[in-house]
Image (tube, rainbow, N blue to C red; front, side, top):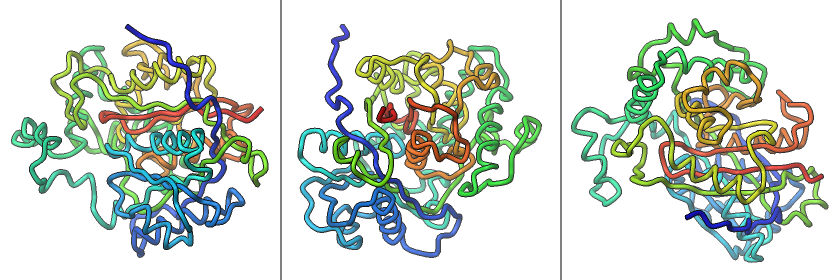
Length: 388
């Protein structure tokens, strides 16, 4: 039975600063330095000093401990520090934790960050090469012996089932790739700036794991991204217009695993995303028709289609046509397919820019925005709004 639970955030927290390094394939510096550069840039964007910060949140995967980053960035005492698990699924959840800390009075200014050399250092796309025995890793024992070693191979299983059930071909995924690269082409910060693609380009790109082609897969990126969260009251006195955190949610589905949830009743959807969607719509009182821009986690194109369906923007199997109609501005920064792969943190930054009105592909009148984090894993999402 579903129980109504009012939003504990109540629009009491806001994103007030965003900062990033350049997005590259070889940063030439340590991940700690990338993190510190991004944190300092975000604080400068907000008009705050390191001494104002009393909380920090990052990913369990991040190699830069909160205390170490705080020390290197000149931040003093901390009253809150935290980490969120499950890869890209942590992105929006870092903001959720920061917002909860701010709303409850545990901290007043919290920085969320993610930094890595994911191209020149450890590459997630290289797959599982060694893993210590663990309860969490046991599920991989059902997949690794059969050659399912990489995220692309794990997603391909669900993608194949999706195409079969709805009578589609791999070309259905092309609209997502073309949309992301179109927006990246006009974004000077995007790695694929000036390099749009066509549906024909998508169809001609080489297979990675059928039915996924090269242009269905996100990039590998070196870089850092940071976000600053504080109270709405304090935000109104700062340098930039705030992006109010209207609602935030995390979600894990039944029989959830980390991208290998092959024993669910149905592989054509994302139950973890449905958990997030129900919470966001219920606690905010909003629905799909109220959203002006969607920034959806796009590590692989099929999961963008499934997210649109789980959030109710269209019916099951209809998302490819929905994207082709271009009725909902989608991943206006270029996404992880076109701008950079920063585990979704750069998507949150794009949401802030859209609400400020200074995005490179600005959507006129953008006032309410959906951002999602990693799919196929326990995930998270945000609804952001202008402070009207």
